[in-house]
Image 1 (tube, rainbow, N blue to C red):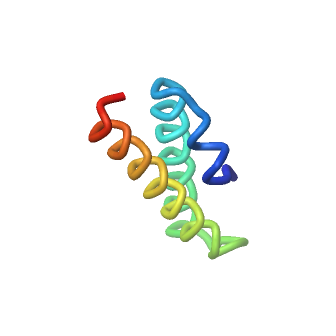
Image 2: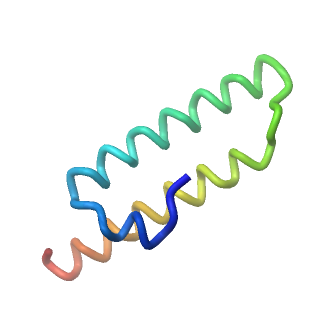
Amino acid sequence: MSTLSHLRELSAEQLTHELREVQQSLFKLRFQAASERSDVPGNVKKLRRTIAQIKTIQRQRELAGV
């Protein structure tokens, strides 16, 4: 996935796009896990962590006024 330093380099528009993509991936993974056995159960945790990191960066920028 994306590293934290890579996420910080993205513009606000790119960050929003990345957030949407990760959320869609998480939805698909959860849907797959509900219908059949997931190959890598650790992926859900990684995607949730990435979503939290993106939202944290967005909030920091919002508070900084950037």
